[in-house]
Amino acid sequence: MRILTLTLMTASWLCAQNTIVIQNGTIHTVTKGTFQGSIVIRDGKIAEVAEKVMTPPGARIVDATGKHVMPGIIDAHTHIALDSINEGSVSVSSMVNVAEMLNPEQINIYRALAGGVTTANSLHGSANSIGGQNVLFKTRWGQNAEGLIFKGAKPSLKIALGENVKRSGNPQGGGFQQGAQQNLRYPGTRMGVEDVIRDAFTRASEYQKEWKEYDAKKARGENALPPKRDLQLDPLVEILEGRRLIHAHCYRSDEILMLMRIFDEFNIKGVTYQHVLEGYKVAKEIAARGDGASTFSDWWSYKVEAWDAIPYNAAIMHKKGVLVSLNSDDAGGAELMRRLNTEAAKVMKYGGLTEDEALAMITINPAKQMQIDKWVGSIEAGKDADIVIYDKNPLSMYAKVEKVFIDGKEYFDRDNDITERPRKEAEKKGLTEKEREIEKKSAPQTRRPS
Image 1: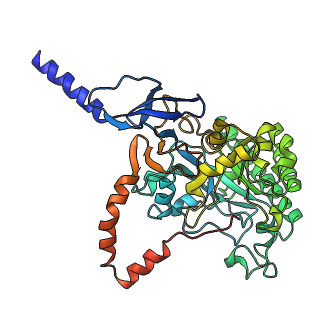
Image 2: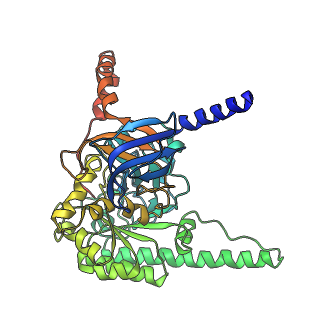
Image 3: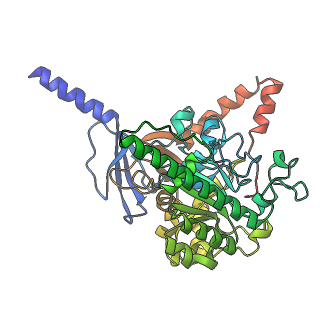
C-alpha cells in the first residue's frame, strides 16, 4: 500500500512539474471570445481555458490579475534569422532553401520574441519571378536551427511580381539585388515575368507527367528508367499537387489578376498574396479563389507600386470575404515585427473592425493562411501553449509584453531580463575591439519593405 501511495505521489509530482496555470487574466481567445479566466497548460499544450478551472496540486501559478493574455503573434512575412535572402542570379530559383542557412543566433529572434511574436515565416526575397523555399519557425530563443523549425507545417515557396523582379538584373534600373547588377537577365518587364512563371509551371507539369508515367510502369512491373531529377521543378510539382503553399509578392491589381489567371490554368490553390496593397481593388476576385492576403496596415508611397495604397485595404478585403493578415516584412532590427499588436489596432480605426477581428489578423488568420491553425493562432484546448501576457490590452500602444510562453515553456520574462542587464553590461566592459564591433552591428536598424 505504501509503495502504491509513493508511486501515485511521484506521478502526481511529475505531472505538476509540467503544469502551469495562468490565473485570473483577461483572456483574448480570438476565436471563442474574451473573458476573465484562467488557462491550464500541461506538457506544452493548452489543457483547459475557462472562467474557472481546477488548479492541479503543485502546478506553477502565474498570476495574471489585471493583465491581458492572448495567443502568440504570428508574422506571415518576415526575413529575420536569415543571413541572406535572395539568389538573384537566375529568375527561377525554386531549388534553393533559406532553411539551410537559418541563423539561430541572430538577435532579431529575441527582439521578435520580446514583442510577443511566437511564430515567424521567413521568406526568400523578391528578386526572382519564382524565388526559393521559405522556412517557418518558432522564436524559441536559445535553441539551435533545427530546434526553431515548426515541425509538421506544410512547406511554402516565394513568387514575386513587379519592380523588384523586372529591375533586379538591370544595371540601368538600380537593381534590387546587388549581386545581379552586373548581368542583364530575362525578364526585364512585367510581361516577361508572367512568361517566366507560366513557362516554369508548364515545364513542371510535363515533369510531373513523366514521373506519373514512370510510376505507372513500375506499378505494372515494367523495368523502366526513372526521369532525370530536376531540383528546380520538384518544388513546383509539390505546388501543383497541393503539397506546398505559395506566398506571392505583389502590389498592383492588374498583376494580381494576371497571377490568378496563371494559377487557374494550373489549378493552383493555397496562395497568399503578400503586400497586396491594391488588394482592395480586386478583393472579390481574391475571395472567389479562396486565396489569402497578407498586407501592411498603412504603409504608403515608399515606392512607385505603393502609390495607390490606402489604410482601409485590410478592412475592405476582410469585409469582401478575404482571409487577411498583417505582417512586418522585417529583417534588420525586427522593428515593425515587435509591435504588430498596435499595427492590428489600426484596422479598428481604418475600417471599424472589432477587437477580435483586429487580433485575428496577427494570430488565427496567418495561421490559417499557412495551414497551421490546428496547432496555433488561438487560445483553445488542445493547441500549442504559445501564449503572451501583456500588462494592458494588447491593442493599446502603451501595452508591454511581460511574459511569452512557447509550447508551454517560458522563453521571455521582462522582469528577469531587466534584472540581468547590469550583469550583461558589466560583461561588455571586457569585450575586445572586434567583439564591440560585432555588438554594434547587431543593433536595431530600420528597413523599408520590399
